[in-house]
Image 1 (tube, rainbow, N blue to C red):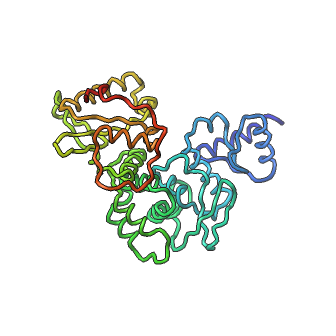
Image 2 (cartoon, rainbow, N blue to C red):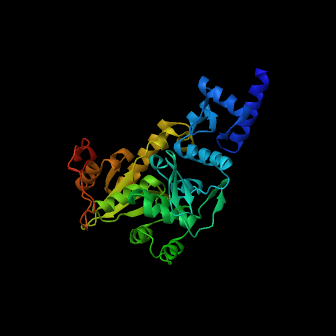
Image 3 (cartoon, rainbow, N blue to C red):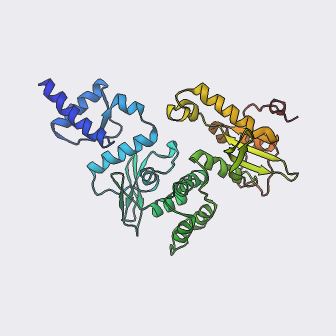
Length: 343
C-alpha cells in the first residue's frame, strides 16, 4: 500500500517538476499523502495547497520559486491573471528578490482586496491577458506600466531596463504606450520620467539600481558599457559598467563587482580562481591609461551613505541636487586612495 502511495506521489511530483511548477492539490487522497510528507520534511508547502520536494526547493533561487508558485497557482485558479512584479518575472525581466513576495494577481472589479498574505490583488483594467511561460499575465507593456507606477524608482528602472536590454520592447514603443490616453491613472508623470530614463545597456538589474541611485544622489549620469581596447590585443575589447569624463579630461570608471560571476560555475568556467585572475588581467589592461577605477558591490550600493561618499571620494561630479535624503551614517569603512595609487 505504501509503495503504491509513494508511486502516486512521485508521478505527480515529476509531472509538476517537468512543468517547473509546484504540485497543486486541494482535496482527496493525494492531498492527504502530500500533507503527510510535509510533516516528515520530505516535501515543503510554500503556499497552501502547493507542494515541492524539499531538496529541490532549497536549490531554487527566489525568481525560480516565484515562477514555480505562479504555475502551481494557475492550475488551482485557471481564471487568475498575474500582474505587476509576478508578471514581470514570468516575462523574464529582472525583478529584485525581496519585492517578489507577495505574488500579484489582477482584479477588474475596482476593489483590489488581498487574496492572502502572500497573494494580493491589483486593480487592472483595459488589458487583455497573454500566456507567457505557462501562466496568464498582463501584457508586457501593461506590466511595465504597473511596475513603474508601484515600485520604488530604483526597482522600477531595473525592470524596464531589462525589458529594453532583452529587446522585448524599444524605447519608442514604451514612450508611446505610457504617453497614450491614461487619464486619471495615478503616478503617470513619474512613469514617463522613468520611461525616458530607461536604457537598454545595463546588463543586469543591479547595474540599473546603481545607476538610479547615482541619479538620486545628484551625480552626473555616466556613460554605460564604454569600450576599452586591450593594448596587448587591439582586436579584443573590454566594456566597463560606468564611465565619467571629468573637466580635466581624466576618466573615472565604475565597476559593479557582483559575487555571482566568481561563484556560479556557468560564469566562472568552473574555477573561481581562474575567473579572479581573468578579472585582474582585464583591469590591468583597462587601467594602462591611468583612469581611476572605483569598484563597488551590491551591498555597498544598498548603503546609500557609503555609496555617496565613495563616488565623491573618487571625484565623480554632481550636476543636480540630490532628490533623496542622504543618511548621515554609519557608513562602511572606506579604503584610502593610496590603496588605488591615487594619492
